[in-house]
Image 1 (cartoon, rainbow, N blue to C red):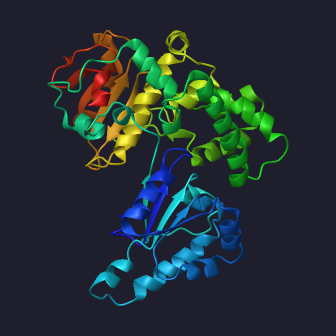
Image 2: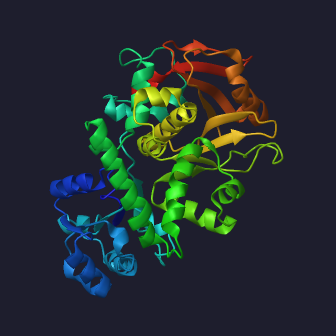
Image 3: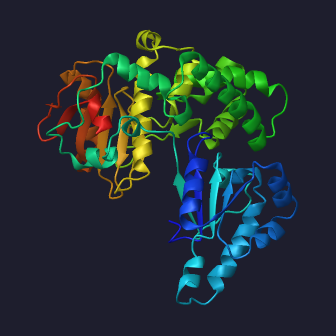
Length: 416
């Protein structure tokens, strides 16, 4: 993207690996590296944004933790416009007009009210989420491409993980630093992360009034317990004694911080009255959600009433991570109709064709487990290509319904 755009914005949650990646890229292609977490650099950028950008000169630069000084956006746009207006030349100087800025940010600043100006036409946006299951288990294939292709004749990559191993994947999540930590150290890390993200970073994006700390302390585990479920703002506000507007604004800020993700309802090509409109909520990292729910070991997770929903969140976020580098773009949705038939994940191609994905914590797949997929297939008609049920068994099993192809896939297929 640095070879195609003047500005590349790498965003995602803190501790997902953005700085490590940006430093590596900077060293490889010769970019200057500056971090706005440095108080001196931050002060210089905030006091004179245009002067700060001009001081960089013609050398391409990494601006790490860019969300700290959103006032830089107009200055970066000015520099990008200036290079765009220069006549093209041959040789290395021509390349200098691309890849001027590599920005990283732990909040989606261009969707925030703090950024008064965007960079349309100037910028490529990339999202770096925590490590995927495939990365953790040395997988090599893209899950989205695999699911869209529909060829499930074999499963690669060794034996299926046990129930305990699957619970461990849920418990650890994808943040790189926690993967090799002991239980006590991991708990301390998540507690520190929660304090920093839910309080310090929240303040930087939202001018909170009153005792918002106590509200966030109640909201964090509440949302963790709702991961994998419909997001009902009225219920959230009522349970936490907030007004509806404040509850929704808190959720929006936490999404900008990459702590949660709202998944829209799939309603295209369906009669509007058939599908509910409410979004579904997912925590971006199941390890953080497990920590907030007090689930500190595999046995507790397997016995928890939240286990099935956390497993769904794990699969959804795996799809979201792989969607960032898949050959084909997809939209991610959920489906639920007025009869409460539902599909956990709907993958929509640009041409409107869809693949439905269900997630079950059971080691046995049954015909009735496909009822939600069958309902979606009936409503979507020819747009529905095939349905998939992830389960914790070990075999690929066909469960076709007439001409509609359905498959039960073992959890191992996430790791290929």
